[in-house]
Amino acid sequence: MTVLVRKVEPAAWKATADGIHVTEVAADFVFTKNTSREIATERCTLSFWRFDPTTRGWEDEAALAIAGGWKTINDGLYIVVLEENIVRDAGIALRESAGETRVDDLRDHHVDAEALDIGRLNVMAKIIADTIRNAGRVVARSRGDLLTLLANAAEARRLQLAQLPKDLQAQVSGHLNSRKQS
Image 1 (cartoon, rainbow, N blue to C red):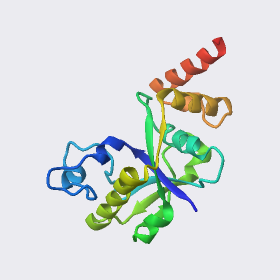
Image 2 (tube, rainbow, N blue to C red; image 1 turned 45 degrees about the vertical axis):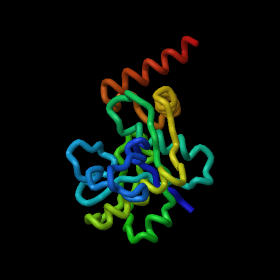
Image 3 (cartoon, rainbow, N blue to C red; image 1 turned 30 degrees about the vertical axis):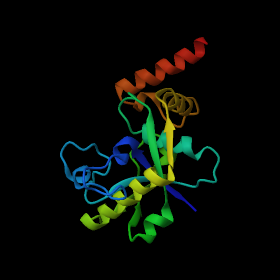
């Protein structure tokens, strides 16, 4: 069994609109211009990271893959954990693709849900909402956790500090320096 993960804001998925049943996803959540990028598609795809949940430390690896693509660490991170077979059984096609992370050995963990039309996007939204609302399969990592993961990856030479965006480089370097002084 493998799982698919992506960044989410759990509170956004728990909210419902007037007249919308708790098991449904309001259209405003999907289509309004003020919605966060919870399920924003690019070229009819939705980005996920794939991991084996029986592998020790996979949750930290997932957080590292996601944070490794950021420009800065402002907050913590919530990751929804979907069972891949549920997504596939719902008729969603998955394609392996290079993930946008600076941790080279994690790039091959990336997949895209592809060929997402309105119907399939709605199916994906329902799977994510159900997982957050009912199964509670959400992994949380604090800002400090993310900086530690990135610092550990830099020390292990899994990512190069010089390749990080300026703000993220300063944050990770500062975290490394504070550890040395402790």
